[in-house]
Image 1 (cartoon, rainbow, N blue to C red):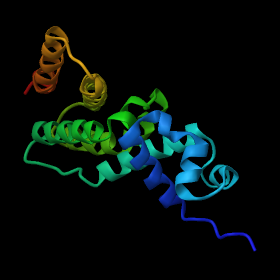
Image 2: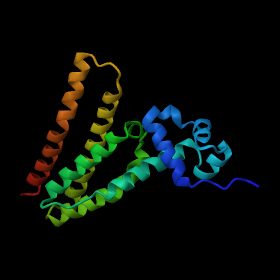
Image 3: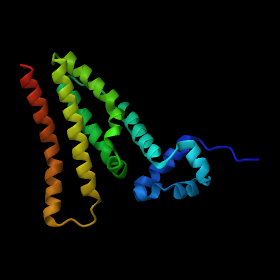
Image 4: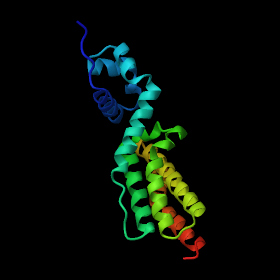
Length: 188
């Protein structure tokens, strides 16, 4: 009698744990299947190939982040807190962040749409709100990717460590500039 399939979520949870602990190389089918005590065939049947597994891990991670979306007193404060939450979520799983592709942008679409609604409700023109939200997500993701790569470097030269610190410190300033620029462009 064949063994029953394990829950797919167990596969994703173990894959994320391996990824966090050992990096992308740990996501090989043989390694993951052995850890789960299933065959590679069963693994492929349940989650597909490695790329599909990674795309689903990214999507799940962003769907969990969506639960953290909250509105604050102003759209600037809402945007500020959302950017900080997104950055921290990306920094929490550095190897996963490095595996993101442009195709993963759909994973943040719902949160960006929520942020857009708040921005438009504040009186910001829809076209400006759209560009603002796109800029915020792009800057946040790009900064996070640079930061997680810098965190993983085993040895920092004094120059690269200083540059990594400068990039991290630059993030809040960049977000504030975008928000101020949008407020100014909207006539507020």
